[in-house]
Length: 450
Image (cartoon, rainbow, N blue to C red):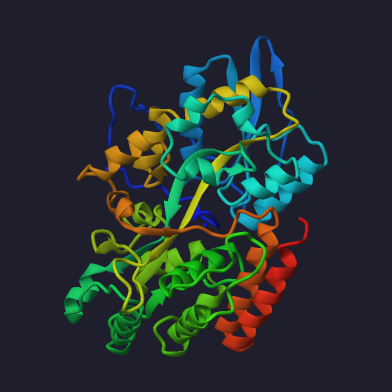
């Protein structure tokens, strides 16, 4: 999720728009054009890290950050600042579930590579509980973690230890076609029923092929989407002690019933049940949808004239809510951390890399790529800038809801959510049955294993 994406979840590499670049203080990163990195959505290859001639080489496992070559730009800048350390990029799967599964197999088997890996913000409990990530707070001072935005460090922690170094944050936004709303004399929707109605109108009037596209496939991204509707309906998925599911509730029924109605009403195409971030975004930037729910990075993609047909026609807003709720709707918290393999042979070099990636230069670069910086000072600089990408300007104004990742068994909990929600969306089971089954599976998962 672009995951962002964002998120959290599956993303495609795209060249980023650069017109919103921000420079912060004197440590802003100056980057020259670099070659594109090769990526893979299904597998990753590894090679041994080592030390030769005073040069330490560490392997960095990372899925695409955005445009082709963006990871390599960061690597090139890091190596220029740290000439005794070389970074070998391992192109990780773009699907967070596949990514996680491959890492678990490698690290649980004692592999010393990758040394550093980019992982979802929902992984700390599982990876910490099962010894799949190094407790960074044992090796980095409290001052290191104090610079991050509030809540990010606690989210990267498990049982008093910090396992992830926040790399970038992410959240969902509503992207909309300004030109289509103007042509139909429609306002930017602030409630979910309003969005549904406008989407249906725009399709029926022949102004656009699809009304609203989003991530409805059976994978992690659907958990993110469902959490947003559920929170706006006033519901939760688990109790505070992570001991029981709370998904089968009036709020759960309201949220999932509405999501299903988006499809049956024609506001969203039936194919939304097969869409992940890349498919939803591609539909939107091709000019074939009026509305899109996606992560921060979708803004830059929509403004890239090489791949987008809607440059200059897109607006960004907080996600809607349900009538009767105050303020904007809820956005799921996405983003990615940097983790260290507990079997690494190059811990000091790994920590040097983490420190640099959390510095002003790297964080500013990520912000200019339309990712939300995790370092609070950089984050605020973007929020107060009129030239920053619009999602970064409004990010601080939205309401956030986390996924129930405080349990080491989160992966199974999430699967119970997205598999049953998808079944209801596709019509293969009723909404009530989907919630009942999800609740039962979640209760079992809360006491399960990997």
